[in-house]
Image (cartoon, rainbow, N blue to C red; front, side, top):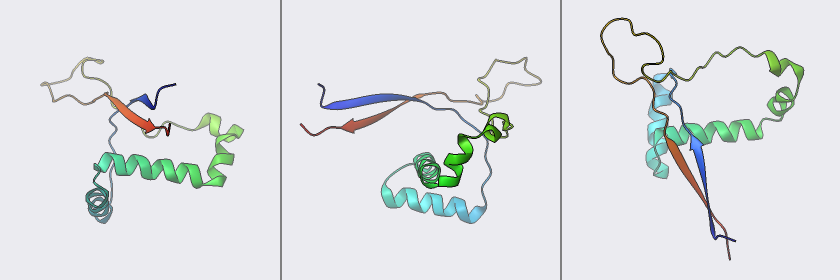
Length: 104
């Protein structure tokens, strides 16, 4: 049995807007824990989704099946006919690695 476990995570880019004080706090928290703002947001949302029992109930209900896709991952560059001059790449899908260490 290996002592460490590496898992691949697919990352996508999405356009989200935050209130200015929240951005400042995200940056401060990232500096506080030595992480990136993306990591702070991801872990914060994972924690929220894990702890909210009403949301867990909602996710198993029929109401969850027809939720509109309000937040969408941005398309990779070139997936649709371009209109106008080329822009910088609109998405970055990169494998992230998460490592869990097991005690021997």
